[in-house]
Length: 308
Image 1 (tube, rainbow, N blue to C red):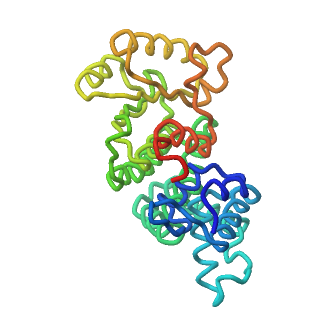
Image 2 (cartoon, rainbow, N blue to C red; image 1 turned 60 degrees about the horizontal axis):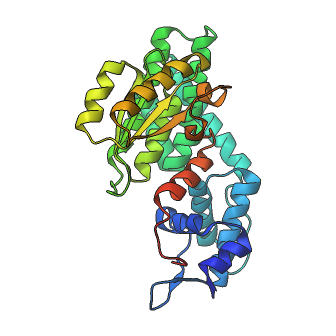
């Protein structure tokens, strides 16, 4: 039996990450001492090592890796004996790509019912995380690229984006809200019409238990301040794709801070990531969603007793 500190040292995984994998994804179920501390078996450690390999070597996300682990363990009579992956990552990638192609084709031709049916089927087959991050998000990126290249009309771009965005919104109400997390306001400022990154980060925050007020793209400034006054917002998320909007965003941030000095910010999107002279680089969130999990765990989930 191993303590969480020993497992963290053996596998090179932070203890806070091990807790998150257990609490949010049911990755393993360690034993508990009388005082409530986790104790990991050899099998727990082997399972965690396998999960880490899928993430590091095959670029799987944790929810997909856990799902494959459960299938893998259920398929073999002796859970202590090794077995090959049931669904190798390249096969899953091909399946995701085929599903994305079918949904994109349906949306491109305004076949909304067929697209929704395919999305429902995809959720059943691949689960929540895989469908969003490996199917729907690439479709939204593809839609934006097609519109900018003139391969999709404005009507097609709006139809495709709205339908997929609605599927994202449906999940906002499925997760519990944790009172120790900040109430979040998420918006793209006036002039910014691309909201994929903002939508993803908002869904990430909502999934982790934060209450999110999502305003979306091209939000006028005059509509922001009444919400900040009335809703007790603690965290504002701003996303831009154009570096030309960095300066107006910095000015908006300064005006918000003048009236609400307690509010914190998260800044995202290629506009901030590529900015050479951003005024607040410490608030810029990396594009990689794996870094988002490390950030929220560090900021809001580190108040547990040592070793627990």
